[in-house]
Length: 326
Ligand code: F6P
Image 1 (cartoon, rainbow, N blue to C red):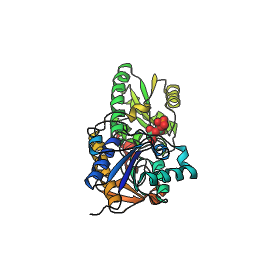
Image 2: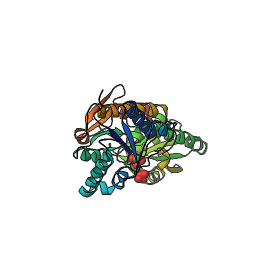
Image 3: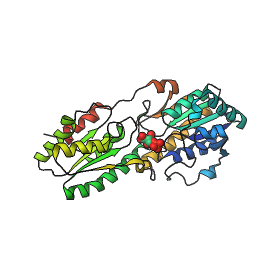
């Protein structure tokens, strides 16, 4: 097959996510397979504008599948959001002979990629964020590892909370979405989970489950708060005030973004990297690689950016049925 692109750039942008390196490796190696040159662009769109990029061979990406973070560094790039910055990035692509780009990141990354495609550069996005908040795909690279990291921390917190008969309020990341909080909350059997997709009634959603637990004989509790829903400190204060239970707050923070990627992230990232290059080889552009849990597909970037991702109601209902049982 005669590939429709000749030199592919690959970059990571926005917050890093475990598994990004596996995606980079797959992009480089798949490109090599098709005889296409690959260029690693550093610090996201900043590297496109400033020309911080280097050719990457199959050997350059050896042994990185299991590394957390991103070997290409990542950044958010306000300059790229201006017409001048965008033009400079497009000029830089042309100067370097880059006619295809794989951009790994979240919605902001795809918005930039979509705009670049209007300058005649073929672009494909790979969803990489621990938030799992991209509407067109059921899964984003890094989510599983972040869930596992949070679960591991909360399991440890549980030991000490149980010993002291305390309530543990844990604030987890997720930006404006509650996917991470909800999955983690279900996995640890949390007493309450507060997410931005649901309006919070403190008495019903927070205090009542704790009181019912207490009546059943529980003496320690775990409350998960998505950072987009409320501050863990505020929630801990409410719990302590209204229940009198000794309460401690833990903000998990950036620890959730680190660590060696779990198998799910390594495997899905590898497949997405492979699919992204195939799209470019076949002449596709302006696409995002999606995974619904079974199949891989593509969606137009413009379409994807219009979509809204909600919480699966049945998953949320689990909390009431199983966690706060009467
Ligand atoms: O999008 C990933 C994410 O980790 C969010 O969950 C969080 O709100 C944000 O990035 C933190 O960004 P920064 O690393 O810039 O503080």
